[in-house]
Amino acid sequence: MGTSQEHIVMLPFMAQGHLIPFLALAKHIHQRTGFTITIANTPLNINYLHSTISKDPSTPSLSQSKFRLVSLPFNSSDHGLPPDTENTDALSLHQIITFCQASLALEAPVRQLVSDIAEKEGRPPLCIVSDVVFGWANEVANSVGTVNVCFSTGGAYGTAAYVSLWQNLPHRLTEAAEFHLPGFTESCRFHRSQLHPFLRAADGTDAWSRFFQPQLGLSLRSFGWLCNTVEEIEPLGLDILRKYLKLPVWTIGPLLPQSKLNSNVSHQRTGRELGISPEECLEWLNFHEEHSVLYISFGSQNTIYATQMMELAKGLEDSGTAFIWVVRPPIGFDLKGEFRAEWLPEGFEERVSRSRQGLVVHKWAPQLEILSHKSTGVFLSHCGWNSVLESLSQGVPMIGWPLGAEQAYNSKMLVEGMGVCVELSRGVQSSIMKEEVKKVIETVMDKKGRGEEMKKKAVEIKELIKAAVREEEGHKGSSLQAMDDFIATLLSQREGLSFG
Ligand code: UDP
Image 1 (cartoon, rainbow, N blue to C red):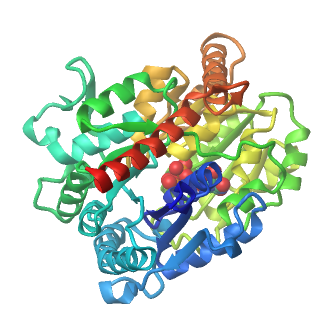
Image 2: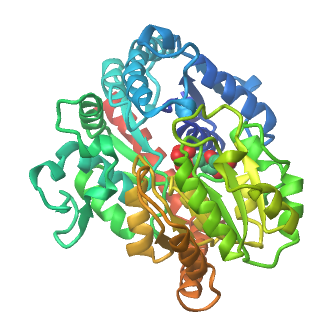
Image 3: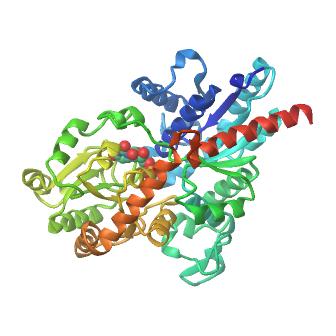
């Protein structure tokens, strides 16, 4: 049987920031190898992937039957969640842990799926590629005689910090505000404020620890890890991650559209209804000077408190900086509900719109198009890893306001390691003042001094990212080489199993 007959099963966690890079990885592997890819997930996420694929001309045709989407049975009501809850994007924090626990119910149908593939094709799939929090996929892989490869949708530094924090809970061993994290050098200190309240409170017996510790522990037994990053931009993070995992780590990022962006790419890529048409957004950006616009977004599932929103708005307005801000109802309100004018200063939206200082976008913006526009100068972000990569691959420096997951460690690395970010605030419960907002914006937007320095570094990183995915005259960039090495390693271990 030729290698083009190989089959890989992919298991993303049910969150936007995971589904998008998993789909991109699936396409990348399929296009580079011709292997059959099956992405398995809950029914609503499969519907979502179907609709995304149908809008994106660059996705392999599903009718070829070599690119498959499979629905796994899942009923959120069986797990104490509201009906049809299949994605983290509209969940409150206390529901997220219930949702994580509910995801364990996918193990049985995945086992069935993989066994069926093995029976039908006469051998197990080449591998399973599972999300970091689906450690159970290792047991499924072992039971059918294949291997599991863990795909970290985060960067190397952030992933290493996240895994080590959950496994070791080092902040519980000290009263001090700062502490050492196993796997990191002694001189590298982490701060309690970088921990989400539920991680800060975790002691190994709480619901979060009881989910994360075993799942991450199992993922550490994978055949290897794939990481959505670039070798040359994260040398330190990768060194830490590789030593911590003691496993091969293939750096195959960034998983972003490589072709010239057309005005529909965000919609095609994320499948989400946009709160503004890309054309209108680009027309607004065209009106502004080069590098003069601040783009603000907290990703697909986060928002901030109404009081924070108010100070951010006032600081923005006072700074006079042009901005595009993706707003969502604040914490404590229905994220899918209507946005109320009272959450922003009186007359804010109308005033900034009239003066053309600002564009307030509701719910979802064409982020890639905005970041790749020449008028965009800086990105105020929650430092979700997809946003980080999207920003850096366009040479756009950042203002960080990490909120959850591994975002605070991404921000730490962007500030201390790369020098492309200033942190404005940290955590969901932080208090921010408009004066500080104005000051940070002015520092980073400044075309001289620190702002200029950050821009220069961001552009250098952009060039490294471009080189990593370039292939010309027999030379392969590091991310393409890593993808080929990954596939070659899988194929040779398969041979080892057959003939060993
Ligand atoms: N995104 C977007 N428009 C928005 C908000 C987010 O296109 O208004 C996309 C963004 O480009 C990124 C993803 O959603 O690809 C968010 O992923 P990230 O890892 O940054 O954050 P998460 O949502 O996982 O917290």
